[in-house]
Every structure is written in structure tokens, then in C-alpha cells.
Image 1 (spheres, rainbow, N blue to C red):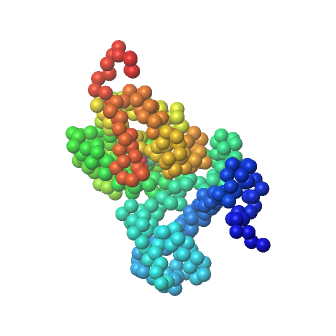
Image 2 (cartoon, helix red, strand yellow):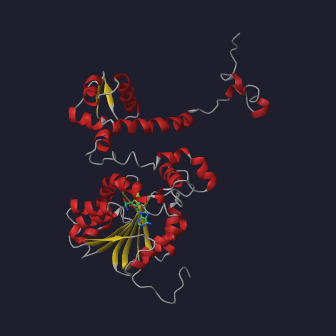
Image 3 (cartoon, rainbow, N blue to C red):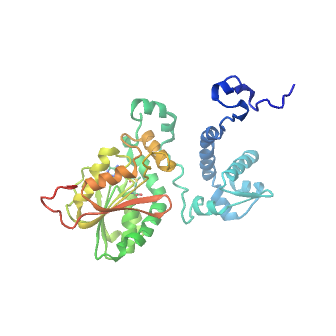
Amino acid sequence: MFEARDAPYPELKKTHTMAHVGRPFTDFKPPAAAPVWAAIEGLARYNVLVAALELDVFDTLQRIGSATLEQINTEITASPEHLRTLLDSVVVLQLLDQVNGIYELNDAAKRYLVSDGPATMAALIPVAPGPHDNWTRLADTVRNGRPATPIEDDPAAFYVPLVEGTFTTMYRCAMRADLKLRYSALVAPRVLDLGAGGAPWAIAILHGNPSATAVVNDLPGVLPVAERKAVEHGVADRVELLPGDFHTVEIEPESYDIVVLGHICRTEGAQGSQHLIERAFAALRPEGTLILADYFCDIDRKLNPHAVLMGATMMASTVNGNGFTGQQFSEWIRAAGFEAIRLIEPIGFQQQYVATKPRHLQLGVVPGA
Ligand SMILES: C[S@@+](CC[C@H](N)C(=O)[O-])C[C@H]1O[C@@H](n2cnc3c(N)ncnc32)[C@H](O)[C@@H]1O
């Protein structure tokens, strides 16, 4: 028979008595399973979005406007029931709206998911987590300390589509950064963009400053993306291409006003990151500026999930990659000799450490003394 004072969770009664936990068992409320379900659903959420992109759902809705399932299916030609389930799933992801059976793009879809949206991530989404197979072998990677098939085995295969996908966001960020950095006001600055990808930073600076010139480095298999983007943006005549490994390629010392390390440190590990920062220091003229973009974990590695999970993404698919804290980066930047270290965030979730090479190295002065 029902007892008024029975616990709502009878299976917990034996262990959660007053004797065990020091308070009446009726007070005990077990934690919600929501974080567990959120993790399980993460896989479904991601794959639903990838499938919707692959089926052209967002571009179709942009082309035909708000539409019923039947109207959408005239364009996409899928199993109607399955398409409805997919569309409804995208609606619960809050990336489409549905009212009275009419599906339509919401503001997020218009901005991020149609392929010509102002901040489109459409090309990035399939490649952003790294090779999908590597996630299914994550436990082995943690056990062995490296993935079985790291992206370094065939970097161009991974990075060409990745840098195509990230270009829009990084270019938008680099353009906005002028409000903080005023690169447009420099006189004939010389820019070095290491691991440039599509060269969003170099191209934004060349666009903002007609007197600027840039040396753009990447691996030989990836550099053609930068070359093409420079042509598309009308700045190719001021770009010199420098193919090669950014750890070893020859760099003219004390020759640059700006050195960009854009999202290249976290794949290189602590030592590799410090090496790149030291190379940037050597390449800069006195008073030159380092721009180091990455996703920075907070000091306890728990308050910025995006950065912490980006570290896991690096672990899943690279030999040395991991997540590093803002404190680690700022210490490495200071140790290399930079001063005036500051953190900027030109657009949401995109942060850069900016630092200045001192005007004169004071010989005989011991740093920190
Ligand atoms: C995450 S992408 C960043 C692209 C660009 N800097 C940005 O901020 O959007 C990393 C880039 O580093 C390049 N890269 C990786 N390892 C490299 C190496 N050893 N030498 C030169 N470039 C490398 C990749 O090809 C890729 O273009």
C-alpha cells in the first residue's frame, strides 16, 4: 500500500537512510541523468546536422522559402517519413523553425548554415571534429598516448577542407581585429603568417592596409588554398608564398612588423608552441606585434568547455596536440621576450594574445631581476 512518507526513489532507500547520510532519506534527490543524456545525444545532434547539410536542407529552404514537408521533398527527394524525422530533429536543435507544419530558416540557420550565409560554417561542420573514425578509437588513443592515424600522416587531406571551412570566421575575426590593433594605420607593414591556411589574417591585413605586404607560409599541399584566396580577394600581388614546415622553414630575422600564429599552436604541444613563439619573436622587428590565436582553457580547465573539448579534439587526431591554458600561453609569450601582453576577442569565441617585441633588448639586464 502507498505510504505518504515513502521516498520517491525507493531503490535508494537501503543506502540512503539517515544513518548513512545523516539526514532523512525523504530529502534525498538523486542527480539528474541529463548530463549523461546530453553526451549520448551529442552524437545524434552532430550527425543530424551533418545529414541536413549533406541533403542541402538549408540551401533548399533559402531558395524556395518557407515550405511544407512535401514541398521540401519535391526538391530533396527522400523518404518522406525519414525526412520529417530529420527536419523535426533539426528543429529541436533550434536550427530550423516549424510552425503548423511549415518549416523555415531561423536566424541561426540563415547566418551559419546556408552556404553563403554571412558567417557560414556549412563547410566547416563536417570536418571540424577531425576524422570521425578517430573518435571511435579515443580510448585506445588515451591508452597509447597517440592516435593510430594522426592527421600528420596526410596533413593536406585534412587541412585543405578545414581551412576552406574556417576561412569565413577567421577572416571576419581578423577584419574586426583592426579595431583593436589598428594594423590599417601602419606604414607599409610586413606580415608573416605561419601555418596560414587560407591566409585569413594576412589577407585581412592586406585588405585593410593597401601599403602592407605579406609572406604566407603553409605546407606545400595546403598553400594553394592561400594562393587562391589571395587572388579572390585581389591582394595576390602583395603576397609571397613560403612553402614548408613552420618549425624549420627559413625565416628572415627581425624583418616583420606583424607575425601571426593563427590556430597553429594547439596541435604542436607545449614544446612546439614555445618553439613557434620563439620563431615569431626572432622574425619580428623591435616594436613588432605577435598575434597568437587559439582556444584558451581557463586556469582550472573547466570553465570554458569549448576550449577543453577542443583540446580533446586535438588529442583524438594529432600526435602532440592538446588544450592549453591562457596562463601557459602568456607565460610562454613572456618567456620568449615579449612585453605588453594582452588578450583580445574581436568576435565571440575567437580570442588572440597580442604582444609586442621590446624596442631595445637591454643588454646585461636579467629578465625578471
Ligand atoms: C587550424 S589551421 C589554421 C589556419 C589559419 N592560420 C587560421 O588561423 O585560420 C592550421 C594550419 O597549419 C598548417 N600546418 C600544420 N602543420 C604545419 C607545419 N608543420 N608547417 C606549416 N604549416 C602547418 C595546416 O596546413 C593548416 O593550414
